[in-house]
Image (cartoon, rainbow, N blue to C red):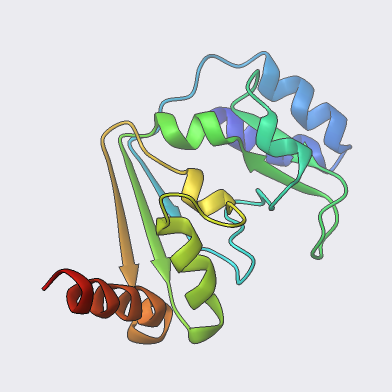
Length: 147
């Protein structure tokens, strides 16, 4: 947590400074991460097809070309999120239903960053009915096929 605080504080002086401080910090192992998900499947400022998804050398990094405002962000990397003991997603709204389906798909047409999250201990998803709608449709279709 200290690495994240230091990186966020340093971001005021520049995103590169934040990444430099975070890079020298000890390995990050969080007990829990609370995550949301955007309609495009992004989570924690990890956007689909963005280079930061490939970052493995740091627990905390920066994004200076985010496809959504604000353009400059400090974020945990995928390895840091996956090292957590618990990842908890809270996702609401029908606009996220297709991204939820993609996150749960064994072989999605277009993988979404939220679907790449698999915490070291457990990963839980809390979905409202609109967000889960396409999962329910897939479940019903499988029930029809396989009884």
